[in-house]
Each structure stands twice: as C-alpha cells, then as structure tokens.
Amino acid sequence: MILWVLPAENIKQRLRCKTKVYPDELPNTSVVIVFHNEAWSTLLRTVYSVINRSPHYLLSEVILVDDASERDFLKLTLENYVKNLEVPVKIIRMEERSGLIRARLRGAAASKGQVITFLDAHCECTLGWLEPLLARIKEDRKTVVCPIIDVISDDTFEYMAGSDMTYGGFNWKLNFRWYPVPQREMDRRKGDRTLPVRTPTMAGGLFSIDRNYFEEIGTYDAGMDIWGGENLEMSFRIWQCGGSLEIVTCSHVGHVFRKATPYTFPGGTGHVINKNNRRLAEVWMDEFKDFFYIISPGVVKVDYGDVSVRKTLRENLKCKPFSWYLENIYPDSQIPRRYYSLGEIRNVETNQCLDNMGRKENEKVGIFNCHGMGGNQVFSYTADKEIRTDDLCLDVSRLNGPVIMLKCHHMRGNQLWEYDAERLTLRHVNSNQCLDEPSEEDKMVPTMQDCSGSRSQQWLLRNMTLGT
Ligand code: UD2
Ligand code: MN
Image 1 (cartoon, rainbow, N blue to C red):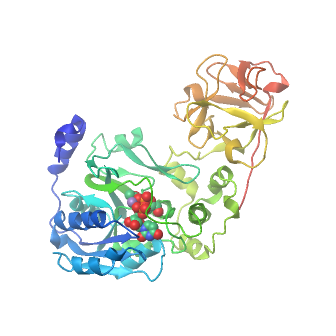
Image 2: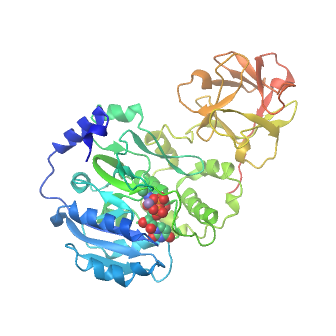
Image 3: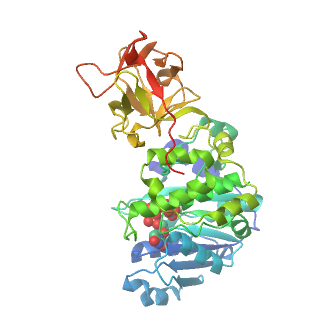
C-alpha cells in the first residue's frame, strides 16, 4: 500500500483504523461470489484476496455461483484449480442464466457461515477488510454492512483509494448514485471518520449480513432478473423494516468499475432494469413511485409480474412507509418528502411548458410545446420552495437571468422561488424578479423580468400522475 499518495486526512484515518481492537470471538462468514462470463484473472484475484487477507477461522467457505457462463475455462479448469486452495471453495452451477439476484439466492441457500458476505467477481479485499464488518454485525445483528469500495482501474487494474466522504443515494430514475456524506451524519459521528456511516442505500455488490437476519428480512426479490434494482430494494427494505445499513469505513475492498459488461441482458437492458425497478417502486415506495414513473415515460408499460408475495412480506414485517424513510433516513434525498406539485409548468399566455430538453447541469432551462408525456417536462415545486427536476434545480444568479439548471444545494439562496397561487407568478426571491416567457432573441428559453402581473408571467403548476 502506497500511503504517501493519499491526502493527509486519509492517512490519519487509516492509522486510527489500525489501532482499533476487535473481539476475538467474531461470527464466521461464507463468502458468496456470483459470476457470468467473468475473466480468469479478475475472478482469481477476488478469490485469492479473500483467502490471503482473511483470518481463516473466520472463513467458513467460499462459494462461487456460476450463472451459466459460456467460457470454457470457467468449467473444469476452474473446478480443478480451486481444489488446491487452502480454504474450501465450492462451485455451484445455475442450470440456466438467471441473473445475479437468483444466483446469489442459490449461493446463500448453500452456505453455512453465521454471516453471508457477498462480493462481485472482480474485487480485491485488503488486509483487515473482514474483521470490522463482522465486529459490527456482532454488535448489532440487524446492521447490514458494506466496506468502502475502492476503485480498481479497468484499464490498468491498479488499485486506487475510494472515498469515505460519500454515501449511497438514488435519483428519480432510481439509479444508484454516490453523494457527499451530509453534515448531519458527520455531526452524529462527532467527526470521527472511523465510525460507520449510516447510508440510505448501498451499491449492492459488496456487503455482509447476518444469515438469520437475511432470512428474516426477506432475502431478495426472486422475481428480479439479471441485474439492477435489487440493491435499492434491499436498502429500502432494511431501513423501512427496522434494520440499518452502514458503510464501515475501516474496511476496504477494491472493485473493477467496468465501462462495458461482458454479458447481454436477455430481453433488452432497458426492459430488464425497468421491470426490476417497477417491482421495487410498487412494493416499497408508496405514492412516491410517481416521481419514477413521471420522469421515465414508457416505464409504466413494462410488465412487472406479480409482487403480492413481496407486499405480504412488507405487511408481515410491519414495515414503515416510504415517507418515514425519506424523513428520517434520507432527508437530503432528490425525491422531496413534501411538495406542492409534480408535473408540467405551463405558461398561461403561450401555453408552452418548461422543458429541460434533455440538457445537463449548468445549462439553461428550455421551454417548448407541452407534450403531456412527463420526462423532460416534469418539475416539482417542493415544500422547500425549490423548482427541481431530479437532482437539478432552477437557479438564477444574475439580474435578468438566465435561468440555469444547477445541482440542488438545499441552501435556498439562488434556488428559492415563491409561487403565488392566486396571481400564478413564480418569483425568484433573491432577485425579486418573475419567471417570464421567452424574448424575441431566443424562443427556446424563458426569461427573468421585473414582476408586472402580465399573462406571460403566469404559470400553472400541474400535478400529473402517469402509471400505476
Ligand atoms: C452494481 C453492483 C452489483 C449489483 C448491481 C445492481 C457493486 C460494486 N456492484 O453493479 O453487485 O448490485 O450494481 O444489480 O456494488 N452477474 C451474474 N449474472 C448476470 C449478471 C451479473 O452472475 O446475469 C454477476 C457478475 O458477474 C458480477 C455481479 O453479478 O460478479 C455483479 O454484476 P456487475 O459487476 O456487472 O455489476 P456492477 O458492478 O456494474
Ligand atoms: Mn461489479
């Protein structure tokens, strides 16, 4: 490990982690690794790092679940190879391609350890990765724990430190995203960065869970295919049903973040992911699923199968509503806990709608004929008085505009808007100007003008619901 390239604060933290003492009596773990068409080098790098960098009395076994790979070397060659390793390595073969969710379920069912640790098939565990995870579970068996995921380059395969200053979140499209650990969580830990971070969601690939708790809490949704959605499903379920999810910052495991996958998605990538996300939204998100449906038009047409078993699970476990999760676990979420409207913002005079035109951060918000299909024309006027679409907020930093879409910062400032439901005006508080129709020069973007009460400054904030 080349410590000298790390920022000073990271070095201090690692040293503080090194001085921690963990109990001798820790639960042991099975390590479950699922793969489809994985490369030999990365798969073996994972297996060797588990064996070489874990105390063997804590390792019950390593279970490799082959999700019907097509590569020859993953058959007999692999079987013969692992026979000679110092820790029992069991290989399980799925009869047909099932996806990582059902493959993990199979691995879990075959495992014997008191804890189950899941890893992707292209990881490198570092020295001391395991003890902090198991120690935390010993303290509280309902805590599901993730290591810090360091980055292994998919070009050079070099190892680079990940950050302990980000945690897991998600956007309206239900994509998992890393966001900065908020101040409230730093405060709760009294600034001690060696203490676990409570995280709203997990990336999904690398975590340890008490075996009995895994069963109690409903394992995985076996109706999910191939890839995607299961990590948020499990995150919501854990929090809403009385557990907790943490990143244990003293545990580091590297992961190869790949630009392309070595496998196909039978039925189409979009279809598979949308189906999984619908299952997760329908079971766990209550009315907040509208955010997902409105921003991704077309998703509601995807058949998501039967979720009644998962809904029954939610009832039996007496899980809390999604609003509770947003309020207590993820108040900095991109989905607002309270909001005034979710839908198009339509100009009364021109009958055109605000439209982000598929643009990204730092660009002007557009305006276009209303299409009523959601997607780029969906904005939410929130109880915090921001106008947001996903993680971008309408922001004005100069008199007379322009109106830019910037990452929402929750600091009010230039992102604070006052909607007058009688006059129908959207007044930008800092500049005291009103949102107005486009000028002659540029018909594609709205303008900021002194408030005049004209019809061009009147806007209808509509609540739309697509789907269900
Ligand atoms: C992330 C997670 C991954 C999973 C996924 C969402 C990390 C580091 N990785 O994507 O674990 O939660 O988000 O679903 O948090 N695999 C199969 N059968 C398949 C497809 C994949 O066995 O049909 C295996 C694959 O070989 C790998 C694991 O599942 O070992 C995860 O797949 P990935 O590495 O392509 O996912 P990743 O890291 O992009
Ligand atoms: Mn992966």
